[in-house]
Image 1 (cartoon, rainbow, N blue to C red):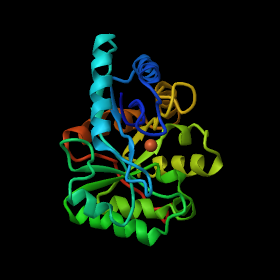
Image 2: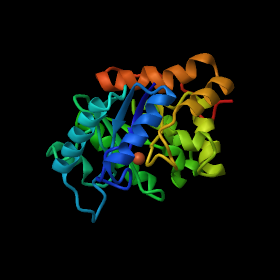
Image 3: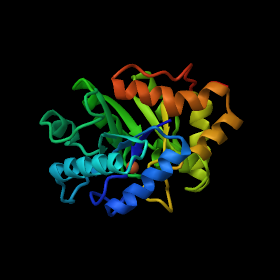
Length: 249
Ligand SMILES: [Fe+2]
């Protein structure tokens, strides 16, 4: 499996606080069957101090420690960009980055963001030649109210990454029902851990793989947790099957 969204880098955001915890998280990931994890630290959060150099240093440090301890887990670097109206400009100025070496951008929003603002930001990013992938749409209240929006994003070629914890019911009824409705309509590009620690919101991907395999067609887990993440990291088009609108039965 490839886990495309995690906060495993030590000391750069509200995820792992130090190298020891990052290593604990890495061992959990590797044991659960993950071969590659992408570190996607929060970035571009208004009012917060940010330092891309610190992220790169933490990435180097963890990469070296994984190899020193012979943990069979590949580490890649991305970023979870907070969606602000100046995010497209900052991307153009190369102050922000996506999945390294690709056109794909992982972007999150305020849970109560105005949907018009969300569309504006996504479309601007797309116009610059990037492909936005919306992080955990099922957790946003504006998506829970109007999940058809994810179908509209899909029609524009944008991706949607759903969290393990939402599908497993750990964030409550709203995210659980919305995440399953999106999977059932083939509107999800990838499922990821969005791991923040080794105890809560962990990088254990086995449980959600098993749940998807039990509840959906056999190819679903493979597509959302292996094939599409691999396509994204190679900068290739992803597959969702036949996306279905919420207005179709
Ligand atoms: Fe995240």
